[in-house]
Amino acid sequence: MKLIKRALFSILLLTTVGCFNLTKLQRAGYIQPEDFYYEFPFTTYKSLIIVPVTLSSDTTRNFLFDTGADLVVIQRDTTTGKSMKITGASNRTVKFGREVVPSFQIGDVDFRSLQAINSNLEGLNDKVPNFGGFIGQNVISKANWRIDYPNQTLTLSSRNLVDSTFQKIEIDRKDGSPFVTVTIDGEQYQAMVDLGSSSALGVPNESKLAKQLLSKYDLREEEREVYTVGGVRTVKQQVGTIPLVKIDDYEIANVEVKISSTNRIRIGNRFFKDHVLYIDNINGDYKIK
Image 1 (cartoon, rainbow, N blue to C red):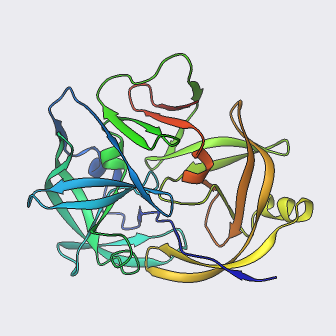
Image 2: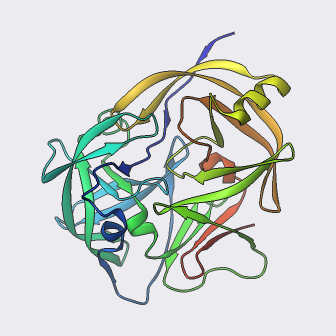
């Protein structure tokens, strides 16, 4: 039976123009004050974490927290600045503008002189209230973040925020994006930690993992609206639940899987819905409990 579901959002931003040095763009900028701690309750939209951000104009707007976005993305009605090509999770490529954001403030933590890209993100700007854009890796990599999903609190700090009750997850960074090793039915795979996705586990429909899951589990077909670079589109996907997924040695049971036209295996916000996730930029890994 075919079902039509509500929108699912995911955005992956990759520079595709060779003259731009992505690592250099991500490292640009600094934080004031140097020693900081800020905790706040977060809200969600389709399970995506919403963070209020005050921009240089003293306007506070709602940004989506996205570990799969290489840079901060600003919602602009009209693209401004030098243009650059961006490829999304659906492999569509569009032009974005490039700008410098003088002040990008979360609570009393001010990220200064950030590189950002901008565009009219149609399909999101009319659905997320007071939508401002995406918080990408050039902000995320500059702080430590503790995301308490059950209590819906987010903490960012220059200090260590965890204790021995957390379990370490090894991170492999590719172009700044975090990848982990997941084990499913005894086989290991590389998966991106993409908190710009509302899915638990997303699997490319032409992959070896997709074929194995389809042969072993009873999945149902759905149609769903998905946001990636280039706007909203309707996709067909196979959806179901698999009994166990391991990240390193940490086990998570009864994980919802979606097989669709994504370009890589991803784990998103719903994967961590019963857990506390810590992005540790002091030690360069993630931790979970």
